[in-house]
Length: 498
Image 1 (tube, rainbow, N blue to C red):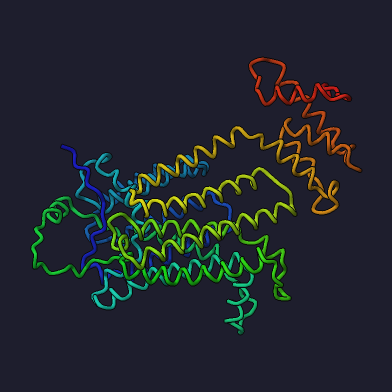
Image 2 (image 1 turned 60 degrees about the horizontal axis):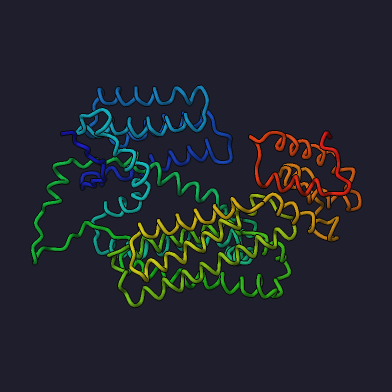
């Protein structure tokens, strides 16, 4: 019977001495990724980084390696990199991803004899589970259990709070201003959120390739059947970053931080309070909708991890109200994001992507409320996924029935500078990109001063597209038919020949 052994972290005491080396390799590869990828166009650099990652994995796992497996793994990597050398695209990138996982599995796991099926678990553990191992692996390697336990209780609250603080500083000029004032010696410095998140992402992705540990199947089976007696000593080598103490500390910090953002939005975004002299209302209102949505998504992920069914926080009478308060603040923050986007659209008009952003933000708010429903109703994560999929499907179905191009075109004409006297000038080229459904709005825009000459060419081209759509029953659509009836009803019906 085929053994589908799964690569799992197995941290041993003899690896503690190698920890500084592995951390140095990981940091070096992350710095290399920064130099190769950050704010740069990517091509052959992806191939070079894959080779460097393979070499780093070889150096970090020298114990137990042999030259035959090394040669086989290098051959697998070479075959996977050849298409990317030809051209890097989505397909060739997948070949790199597959070759790395498969090659590292051959390089570092001699227990699996199957060349293909037995190594499929490497993809899951290197790319899905592995990125979450960095902090836990490093902490496990220390022998000071009391210090480790105390650190575990504070790591998630502090780390997550720092990430939230960076996102808030990116989204809110007032918070950014306050942080700069904390460092008066360098008032010109700014927080590069994108680069910070890039380093965090690369570190977490590189670590499982450098600190590779494959647990043998016999060891896993022995651990699974290990008897547990009533007076058994508690394990001291386990590390739960989402224990009840860590969750409670996290929620207290998060609610305090989110309360600051909520109060600022209530005062300045909704209440129109007077801002400091060096902060404009436009910069406050038009900045940060997307970082705040990222914050809400991170909050949702934390709640799912903290309030997992059967977890230590599920029945706590203190933690539950804090979770509900935090989710309520997140919903308020999403509402503020929608208000920010609304103010932005009032100034810069509407686009398809901005409509999609509105819909996305509403779905995030619904998802947060569904998380609360899952906790209250004591449902599983499977129920939560199904409800979110139903919400997504229903939303997409409604969007498919709504004539978004016509709505966008009509809104832009109505709120353009030519029609309302404020805002920005009408982008006639974008109206053309919306397709024939923008024709009613284009006809109305042609009556505005100075626009008729600019719109004639675009309108005639759209009329030709509409005529081609209606020329054959094969291209017939109810929406196009309704538009054609409207065009036929116009008293000064223009020629569709263009």
